[in-house]
Image (cartoon, rainbow, N blue to C red; front, side, top):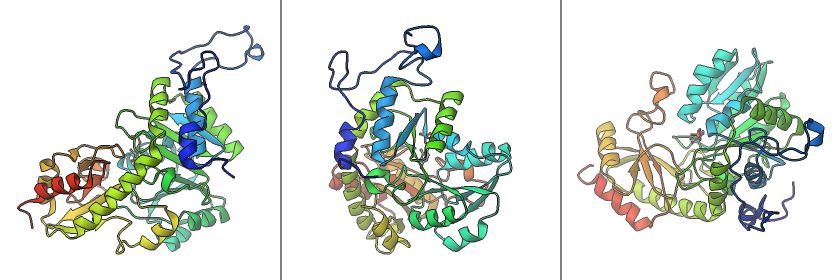
Length: 384
Ligand SMILES: *Cc1c(COP(=O)(O)O)cnc(C)c1O
C-alpha cells in the first residue's frame, strides 16, 4: 500500500478531521453511549447507533491506528489482551497455534488458561530458528504468533521469512508489534497478516491508559474481527481513545529519543563491572544484530540485563534506583525497571519458559541520558 504521507505526518493527521458541528480542530470526546436515530428500523439509521458497535472518537482513533501500520483497517480494544483474545478467537477447536517461546507473561497466561481450554493445540517454540518452525507445522496449524523484539529477552525474529513460510502452509502470521512500534518496523509490509499492539505502552506513551489495537489488510478477516469486537464487546472507550490519539501525535518523536537513550545506556552498561550480560538488539554482539539492522529502523527503548551478583544484586538495583521506577508496564516517557521473573512474567514461573530471576528489564524513558546513567550507577554502587 502506498502511503500518501510519512509516518510523522500520519501520526498527527490520519483520521483527524475538524469536528463538523463546531469546527473543533481536535477530535472531541464523544462521551455518549447511544445516538438518536432517524427512525425505528435499522435501514433508516445512518451513522452511529450505540457506542459498542461504534463511536466517533473511537472511529477517529481506529483510522489513525490503521494508518500507523500502513493497514486498511484498525480496531481498538479495551486492552492489549482483549485485542490478542479477539485475534486468537479466529481459531477453532482442533486448530493448531504456534507461539514463540519468549512472550509477554499475559500472553503465556492466556494461552495456557484460555486458548488451550478452548480446544486449540499449542506449540511453544523459538521462532528465531526457522527450521524448528518448519518442523513444528502440522496440517491443522492455522496461526503463528510472535513478538519481535521479544519480551523480556529481546530476541529478534525474521518477519519476512516467517511470513513466507507461514503462507506456504496457509497459516496466518500475527505479530505483536508493541516493543518495536510502527516507527521502527511495520510487520504488514514485511508480509504479516495481523498486527496487534498493547497501545498501553509506546503508542500511548504516558502511562495513563490501557488500550489495545489490531491492524490488518484482509477484508474477510476484518469482518470477522469487527464482529468479534462488536459481539464480545471489549471496546475502547471514548475518553481512552482520545487520550491515545493525543499520545500518538508525538510517537515518532518519543521513539527517536527512547532509541538514542537505550543505545547509549546499553553500551554504557556493557562497560560496568557489576553487569554480566546486556540484551539489546543494537549491540553488535546481540545474536540477531544483523537481522535487527535490516528489519528495524532503530533498536527500540527496551533493554534487559543480568548483574554478576544474581538475584540479590538485581533486587538491590531495582529497589535503589530513583528515576527508574520499580513498576510493570513499559513504553512511557518515564524510565521503569522491573524483575520479570516475579513480576510481568510470574505466570511462567513453574514452566519450562521461566525467566532467570536475576534478569532486570529496563524501559528506557526520554529523560536526559546523563541522569539515567547516574541513577543506575548509584544503584549499582558496591556491586561487582
Ligand atoms: C503489555 C503487553 C501486552 C498486554 O497489553 P495490555 O494493554 O496490558 O492488555 C501484550 N503484549 C506485549 C508485548 C505487552 O508488552
